[in-house]
Length: 297
Image (cartoon, rainbow, N blue to C red; front, side):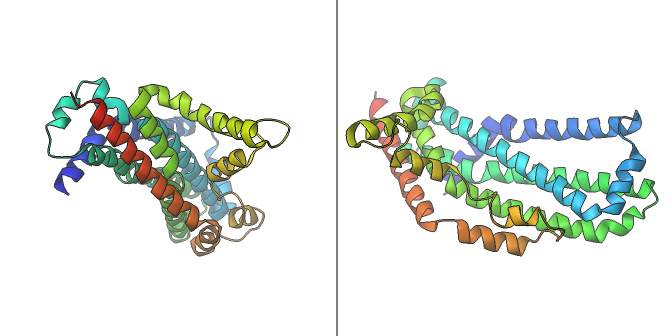
């Protein structure tokens, strides 16, 4: 277990630029731009304060939810490139012999890379998303106070919104990682075989698979109108934008984590998550066997 934790820590140290330094720089630029916009008059503090005074809950809900959605997209995109890079990194930087000398198997090494993608990297982005929400919290209270709206009296209400959205973001990240686990594992396993070419090949593979089904079994009028393509589209679409979120956006009701979680959990197919987890373990194991045999000498 200590060796596995050390391997995950190694992944964080090698890729902290994309998951820690880069996001912190983005937050710093955003904060600096906001402060500069107020100080040079690009944003009217009175107008902003009036908005937060008139509808502080709604404005803050939409703002924090927007940040949460943006960081979720950033995490998914970055993990995709991380898996394509990290699974082939040892071979590319000539570190394979070093890791061969360690008392860990190839399967453990590759599993640690996938483990880092499921734990420490999402946790880092989640903390940065909370920091973004806290900065928006400060902007909301400050502009409202400058407008004479008793901004600090909003602390309790806005803090409640912060907790609701933060809990919802945590749930989305946890379920989203499980939902997209087979995609990450497949890209990583493919990278073990072809290196960084795994990125374009992984995007091409679904079209090739659908075309093969179309040629062999038939289907619609074109190669992408097959059951394979429909299934892959279903697996690629995380069931988030429908249901509660869509209904809530058309009402004036406050955002509710309990209602959001209930709706999302009922929309998630746990059978598909189980199938994806088994698929991920299998492809990572096969990749480790290829890595072990291909680099035996």
